[in-house]
Length: 195
Image (cartoon, rainbow, N blue to C red):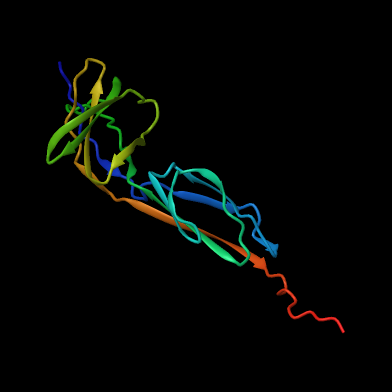
């Protein structure tokens, strides 16, 4: 007798698309008279793009190091980074019974369906049924994303679909600044005379 599994409740964990981080440092943040700025930065996860502003300019990679021309007065360097993809974490309550009320003993996998406009755009088979989900989906472009999940038994019979759960991925940005203080040297002597 074919036994279909009871539907599961699907939750989408809330939270930021990523925990974006920029590490931005200067080799030295203070000096006397003249300082050669050496800036280093990294992003985690790797940013899609970064832009320099303040006392430096231009597009920058998601990680790098740059030696700038000497400065004789204090300067501030700003790095703005952008992430255009995000992630979603799906979690659900695994079924414990079949549709006829008997105990489910042969759960083998879950099928995760990603939807767009109510239509299936991709399927993923998750065979890790030994632990309670979550299931992480990375590199989602900005926009609305929806999923449903079904349980599958050892005979390959797919149970009813869970409720639909959605998440909006938005582009994220972060900014960091580094200030370098230059302690000025005294002005030069002028009008030196000899008597």
